[in-house]
Length: 164
Image 1: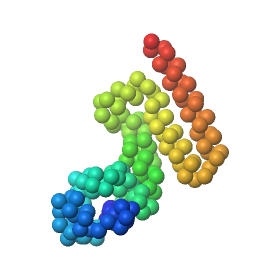
Image 2: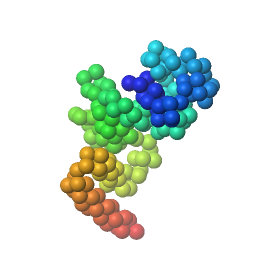
Image 3: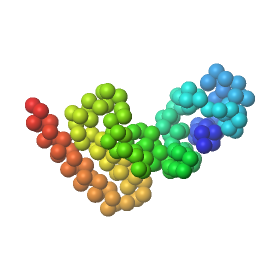
Image 4: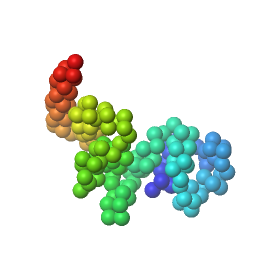
């Protein structure tokens, strides 16, 4: 899946050659060929280096966002690009996951922010829902999501006022 993402990203850059990408990465053209063909295992550092060289968020490569490819999350579960993006970003757990643990499995700073603003994760999830409604052309979904966002924001404002 990543191999095809790399090629698609080069294509978005005006059909950039493998050699030009290799030069940007300080690698050989044959290394780029092996990465794109799947002959060479892709390391996390490769993803970050390629994303940085081509001005692309790493999550786009990891989520299949450039090609629409499904992402194999587990041997039995594949996610579409939008689902994968939300899961990778820490906004939506996999189906059947422990929601509470998922929400708490974050850095100390994020955990503190989520304690101080209990609706924060919900707001992030609603923004994702709104984006999906826009992608789907779902006007009713957009309206419903905006109403939900307004309610959660109002709750957050009340919490903030009580903290003064």
